[in-house]
Length: 354
Image 1 (cartoon, rainbow, N blue to C red):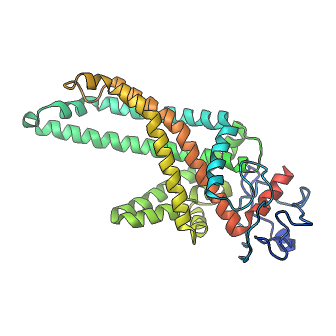
Image 2: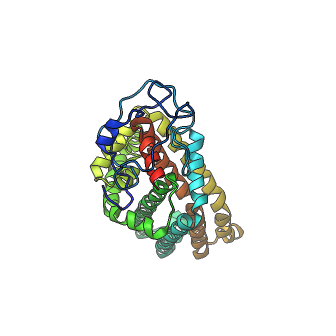
Image 3: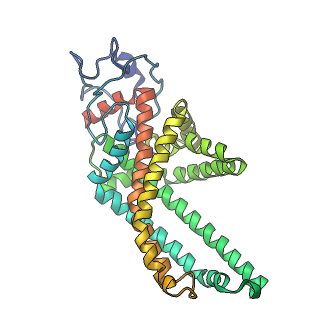
């Protein structure tokens, strides 16, 4: 595995030698608060990296009762299967522990995004205003087509820019979460060096993922939602395991299998929370931008001040909500690996070695 911080695959020889490679309080399980519990030895042999790679052979499922304490809490989450509250809290804790890297990078990326979107809307502003304020009876066909063309052009450009920025930002933030889980220092240079080689694969994954989900939504809403959740863990799988596009999608499918409704509920809740927060933050900017129109109903629908104030509100809201959603997605991935593959054992070893 790479030495750039990817979560490397467990050593098959080491896995075969462990007697505690089981989940739950059961015979042979030495986790939790049981007498004679032995944490993973920091000096034990292990491959380089942060232990997030694809396991060569997942541990067989065990009918245990679960461990109350797991392997401690070296970072933002305890190393055991997580509850909903622990996933949400872990995402918030990651932002609170590393605000400089997370919020600083988010503001930088979103500033470029909002700048480009505001410029695009400003370019087409006159066409929008002409179509919105003119009497429909006197609106010519050319004016109508200009307005429609401008709307589609502006929407297309802003969607592409937003998707690219979201992809770029999510991948970087997931890399941060991977380090925060292990309690390791988060420095911008190290995170960037680890994330940079995954930029092009991540872009390719985003294109494939977007096309698949869009086709599903066009055919019928339910297949689109099902596909969205099924491949929702592909981004953290790609970034942390440092694999390939379709390998990451296959990993997501395996991790989501059997837990679709639970993951759907967690992601939906994170989306609702982030949407409400974004609305609360951006609402004052929207009111300020539309103030002139409210005082003068016959004035233009879109103004330069309104566009730029709306962009500023989007910047502030996105810098807070996007890291939260990315963190939740990354921690759902980590949680599924601990539940299905006993990854908490490997993470405890990596955290102990650090």
